[in-house]
Length: 78
Image (cartoon, helix red, strand yellow):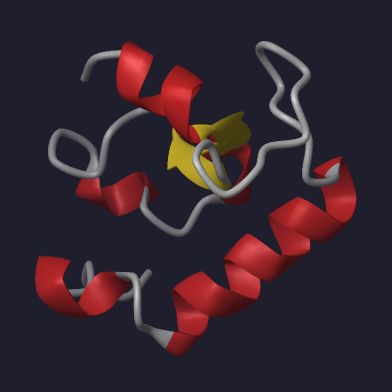
């Protein structure tokens, strides 16, 4: 497995963008917690279940990702 991508570059990386696209294609753009479809003030995000800060080896593991709206994502803690 390759080394974790630096934090500032991660969300712009080709690997993250491709994985994010696959997760959204697989699960749809609906929050897995509150079932909202999101909007401009509460957009849909792809979230790491186990945070990158504590589990950098899981940053590109699809099973460690979930689709959340911004409100649900920010409501959870690391």
